[in-house]
Length: 179
Image 1: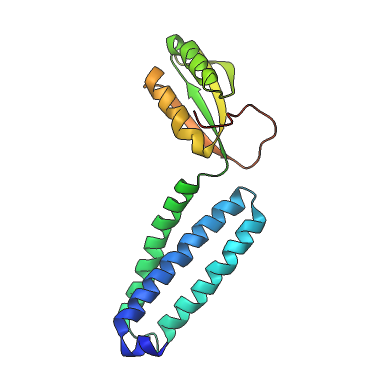
Image 2: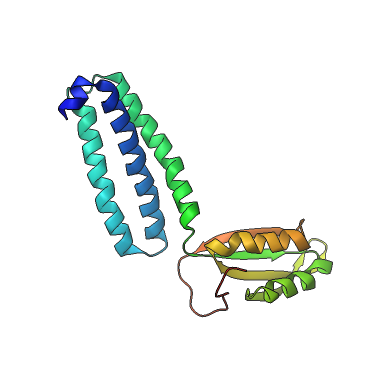
């Protein structure tokens, strides 16, 4: 830590990048917990807190009067949130359910194409503002969500849809490989 006293810029950079890593791991750990992965979350939490303690210790070394240390700490926190969300997008683990509300004329074609790509789906008849319509419910691995949305945008680009994260599933039809 003596190098940080001799070269303050290294201390600022260390604080910033340590905080980015710590907060990114925090975001990732929370996502693991909400999806039921408690053991991996605990392991990530160990490293997260270790980095946090070291970064905070560096901020407080020599007193908390160096405004640049505080700025580096705060900027690392903000950046860590962004990095954590990018890590979550790249890992794309877990499952989502997509509810699609295609126009009547697009429903059959969309169903056929999704099934041709080995996606399981359930059709529910509902009624909207302008009468009956089909609701397509598709549960997929998060990594397959872009593929499903791409199929939907090709067949019925104006379809209203929503997605929700799922904590656990049992059974179902899932493609062995991404189409």
